[in-house]
Image 1 (cartoon, rainbow, N blue to C red):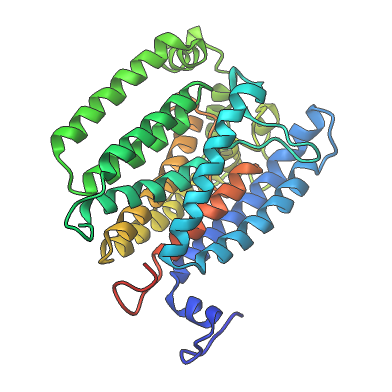
Image 2 (spheres, rainbow, N blue to C red):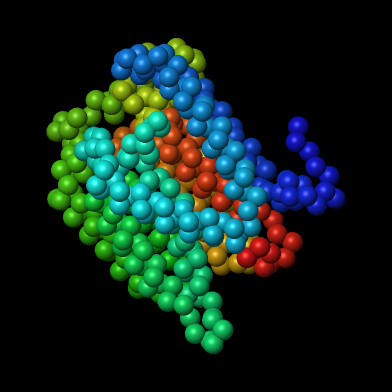
Length: 379
């Protein structure tokens, strides 16, 4: 057991007594649930495409352990350190998203991945989400903070320009799911920063107009929305099998490794891993998974609301929104409550870029929600 005395003023000692240990424990519990589910879901997928039986679980563990280590390492940072990391990550992620437009691999109608020799493909937009949540919070807080001469940094204008650039890049792939998450973070922080409601309403209208435009501009988006609204017109094989898996699992599930419908779901280890939980672990465990995600988000909101720094409050709220929305979108897609988005379930779905990005994002969240002895500590 990791234990430190309250009088221990080392870096790890101070971290242990200031970090939200409940949130840390819940994230680790979610990751362990993911290991169990991928072990149950991935062998059938691996055998179907000609890989070794344990290919996906082995690669998942290879990425999960560094992801959790990165999470703990990033959580040691001060708010100032989180801000600096986010700026560097934001620049790298934007550069990576631009590269996907020229050398990216097209998968299922979208160009979001870059192949790295010797490694699996990398999805730069995964790193854009946590980076933007922090950079956006910084811009809003700078706008509200008087400068040395009494003036204000044009944070709103800069933030709107950054947001517009990101949306343009993401929709060029196209990636409607990531755009939705980024947009939700931006609108949420815009509102919490106490900025004019007229501007927020205008941005919402523009966002809705963008969604309508995406439907008519990109066949990939149109196909998914049409398939959701009218299942008879689209290719809904995975969604149909997903719903069958939930029905087969019932309240208590068929038992770990005993699922039958999961064998027929192509992305059972990734986008539809919640369906495997539904079939093998049942409604009760699925509800528990939802509760675990909700606790992380609610605790983060609560700790952020009690912080006296506007930057910390906005950044932590944005990161918690990203974490919760990603989980909500994945589970909603598996339950046919919304069109499929190709978004992983945090720390549960198989993934490389997603796991590392989640490690960075949750590490930032843990760092920002740590208790501080003084209001301006580390800012």
